[in-house]
Length: 328
Picture 1 (cartoon, rainbow, N blue to C red):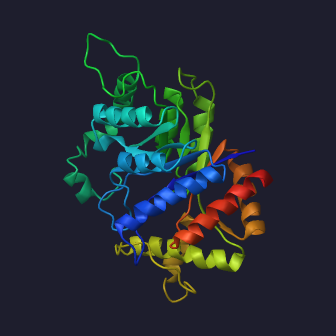
Picture 2: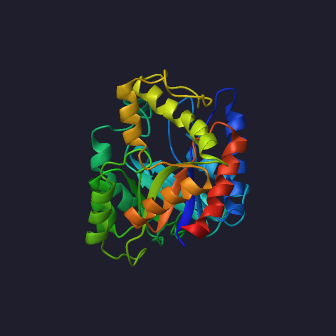
Picture 3: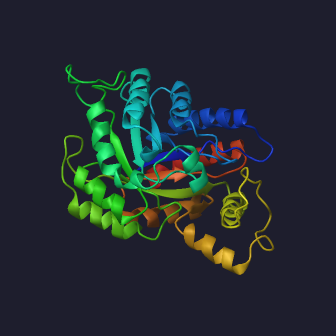
């Protein structure tokens, strides 16, 4: 049985507040645990009106307090935005609060636009180039402490498992060279999926953390009782991607009856291409699409992001995907 996990962006929806978004994330984490999901991850984004997970470690802690067994973590922390020592301290604290349940997924993108990246005081030129060295430094801080040197407290000796996140072949080569598990962002960047997975599996070198390649493939997912209802709920994400192309970002929009008249043909083509691996439908349709995705990727685990405006519909989608696991 392929493991299922959830990537939650703590969305701030039209008509809702940041407090509502955080409360919804707590409910999502509980539902994911009840439905048998393996992980519940949150992502670092900044300066976005529709996402409330900028202080990612704090929101992960909220998910941890709302649950008792599911793994929690980041999908991901954008490491070039931070000192590796600070991330070791944050995730060492999370590991102390929730022993044996914490994952640290790392990315090298800014997690926002360039203006916000500059406001984060990110070194835009050196950040990506120093990513491998920053990972090794982070591994040092999370590893066994040397009493003669500076120690990350909390963090030292926690051995929080590190994941490499990516949407290109660069991340695949890096994850393989470091012998770390790999999560590919095919939910919004599908073009290099199969090339990256082949590189990772072919060049993987065992490490102290991992003996053999382990792959997560990500997808957008919307399940409902019927295909018609799922397609309706999915218009929230379709609008979101159109708005991003128009540089008109805002809160997560309510679904609409039809995308006809909202997008033009060029926008439709681009969004359909970006979201071509999305699993959307009632139980029968969604199960078939998920089976096809798993067969194509041979992923060890599927990470599902559920961009649904209504928290009640989101929770139902989690339950339906949970029930699907036995069939795929």
